[in-house]
Length: 72
Image (cartoon, rainbow, N blue to C red):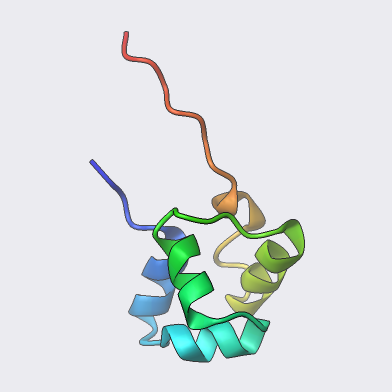
């Protein structure tokens, strides 16, 4: 089951637009959308900017992909 990215959850809970948040951190809305959908991973610099933009509620570690776990 897919889970919603913490950044998307944060943004939706606060009724922030992709365009507004993207402009705040200096990327395009489409790039931000790809990050939220797990299609792209931000640089460490961008992850830090996004974390600061959320007041630290979304942490840099939330942008690091975790390897899939094998079933037992």
